Length: 280
Image 1 (cartoon, rainbow, N blue to C red):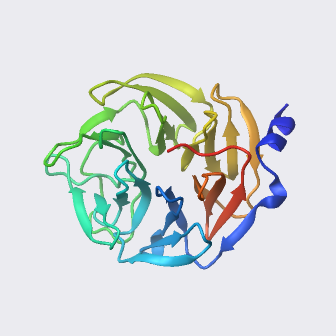
Image 2 (cartoon, helix red, strand yellow):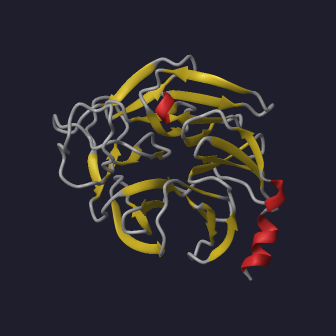
Image 3 (cartoon, one colour):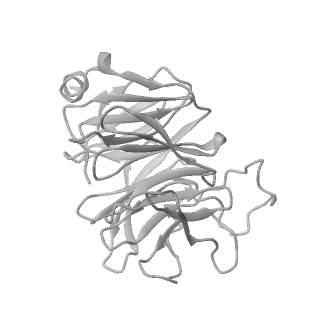
């Protein structure tokens, strides 16, 4: 069954290398046009791959950005790991710091994020010590999922603390569910999003963790690690994309029709035409 479904979703032979000129690629995100932005975190840069196949540097001195996401207003959000902040980056590269601390304490290190239709931001805050940090220990106990409500001056709230090391995160397009990968437990959970933005009803959906993740318009869930693992909405493994790299960090759908899967893997970025498409 897995092979049949896999054949329906993609052709492994169609996986194409876009470029291998980076130190470690992460955080792919797609804008409304279908252009894909991604980070080269060790080199502190954000790159852009346009729908016409042009690769260009979008931003230098990018705050050691990790996860990226475009909100409904077409604004680029970033987990800026250098100073543990959440950024909004304009089309010209101008930075607005949306969040720099929680009650005066530094975040562990915002890793990945997803924005809801209201403009609120969910983000994971695992602790991965960096050699460019001056601090040597956590200021906040625990590694949690936060929600930053929309509106200037709003304070973040803890959305989920029933995880060990949350990493990849993505919400369903209808705004009903949030998926969170706990990379330390090696599990992926689904939460119900309440009207006030809080999360409830943690449910184990996949017995596997992930670095990054995305969804397609059929509700399938894409997890990363040693390649890309595709699960049905019920959590059944239905396909595996082999990526010949030490680590596959993250994925997103892009292109004009959102039918190409972009894969950030170690020093490279790949593109794979799919027979399904991504969600907005």
